[in-house]
Length: 338
Image (cartoon, rainbow, N blue to C red; front, side, top):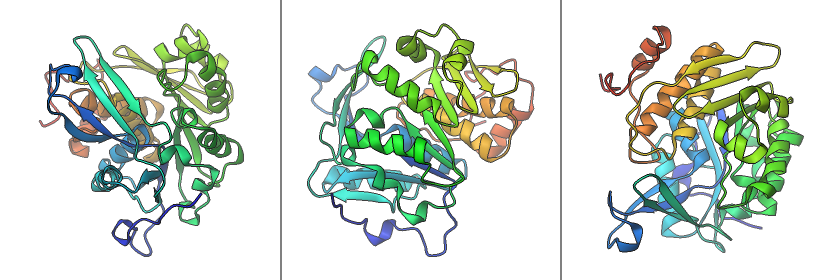
């Protein structure tokens, strides 16, 4: 299955150092009606871009880490918009293929009074045609982290083979394999997804999972039960929404950090932001407590923003909260801009 190379302007400069983090997955164009207007009555929609793995890469880039996003897009205006958007966030996109025979994926947001419904149009998309060869490029060598999610294996058999190859064959020698469970019920039901996601997670080095999704998939009642279900990873991070996050490291006591208080504008993308913050803490060799704090702080910025990708304050703002008392902070009062 062939794909066009990216145009030269997306290539990394000659002699560039290797990416610290490589993320792999589909990113789509997002259509959303004006606030408070149901999609079925909307006469106009806002066009943006969203995808879990490129969200992680974008947040890491804004935290001054070198990130490469690997994917495929269609040879269409939406595909060009996606690549431009991700590149504008500071992420390397020279390993994004352009598929002339398949479209770029699309999803629609339908905000409601209590939740945002999502409608996917991604069956047969360019990204769904990815396969294990996506990780064969020698330019990926030297990465410290390979980040994947449970969305990708739901897209197609070849995408599932790609993720299985990543966690089993370790095509990027020396890279820690990070896996966000990220179950999407609209892509595959829990009874089909549960055994696949458990197996992929257990073969990874670092796992992110929400307490609610772990319960829906595996019936686990708490973080300790998730850890017993997944004995393989070095670290399992269980996120319990607005309550706390728990890191369960092999041969170490669990670390629990309460979540800060945040005014929620839009919850979509907060999990990706948390993963990026935690990974940034790992890359900076922060201790487990500060890694969780940084995850919370980056997620808080996403929760307070209407889009999938939020602007971030300077590192000095994060540093003050990472090193100061954690009671936890009230970010509805202490704004990031300050």
